[in-house]
Every structure is written in structure tokens, then in C-alpha cells.
Amino acid sequence: MKNWLIGSMLVLGSTLAQAQAPTVRFHGNLGYSVGGATLASGNYTNGTSYRVSAGSGLILALGADVRVTDALTLQATFGSHVDQTNADNGEIAFKRSPVELLAFYDMSEKFRLGGGVRKAQNAELTATGAGLTVVTPGAYESTMGVVLEGQYFFQPYSAERKARWGLGVRLVSESFKRVNGSAETRDGSHLGVSMLFYY
Picture 1 (cartoon, rainbow, N blue to C red):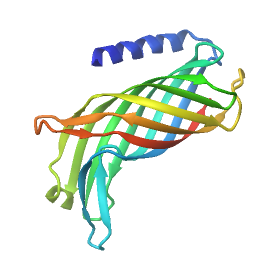
Picture 2: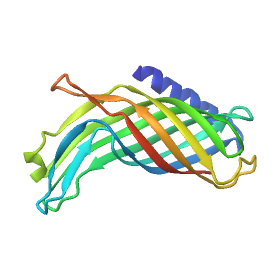
Picture 3: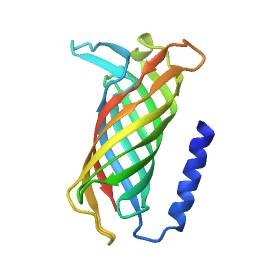
Picture 4: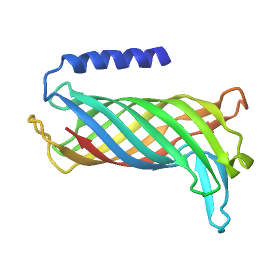
């Protein structure tokens, strides 16, 4: 599966390199997700609670897409997905770097639906300070995830190169298994909302 994903990225990269502007557009998104199994939880010294999960966290992704037909677009992204605590005496964080290959179909000038696959690289539960008394740090291996996403844009698509902003809502199904540890699988499935940018 991993070799297939790398091969697909190379094929898409070659297509992007050969495509003429403005068919190829650069892409970025910033968002947040909720969901997944709890990896760590507890209370801060001030009494408020915290929770670190395998599906929640801040999302940042960069990539590019290429318009194959008038309505069909292929997209590749590499990103960062992090859920962490916020304490002065230590930190617990679940970090992963997802690689995604998605296809979108325009339902209208401003709305499109799509989906594809996702593989979270370098997944790791980390801890510092007091966080080390709560969890044992370690690496995780992800399954091949499935993504379903809807995107709404504030501007209609244009063949001219112009900035295009929008909002995205996605569902992701994936799971994680600790490397050199428990064989238990932890659910990383989540719902995410993002601000989108294309140019």
C-alpha cells in the first residue's frame, strides 16, 4: 500500500509538472478536527480537563491540484495534524504528517464533492515534563485512510489564475497501531472543518 501511494504521488507530480498554468493550482488549508480514540486525558492543576485523541487537532496542509476536465480535479497534499495539551509544566501531543490523494467533481460553480485516500506518516505520541507521568511516548503506524470532503467556494471557478477562498468539511476514516507495543488498534476517524485557499 505504501509503495502504491508513493507511486501515485510520483505520477501525479509528473502530471503537475507537465501541465500548463493555470491548470495547476497551489493549495493550502488550515482547519481543526474532532474525533478518534482518547490517547490521554486528565485535569490541569486549575481543575480544567484535557484530552488528546487520535482524531482531533489542528490541521495545516499544502499541495497542488490539476484540473483534468471541466469538472474533475485531482489534488495531492502533504500536511501536519497535531492534537496537544497546553500546560506550563509539560506537554502531551499526538502528531502525524498525512499525505493525501483526492479527486473532486464540481457539482456547481461554487460547490464540489470529492474523496480519496490518506496515509498518516510519522505518527507519534510525545510527552515532556509532567506529561511523562501520564503517557508513554511512542511511534504509531497508520492504516490507509479514506477521505470524503465537500468544498464550498466564495468565488466561482475561473480559468484565469486568481486567488480562490472557500470552506471545507470532511470525514476521515483511519486507525493507528502502536509500533513495538500493544497490538490494540486506536480509532483515528474524525470530522474536520477547514479554511481553503487555491491559487
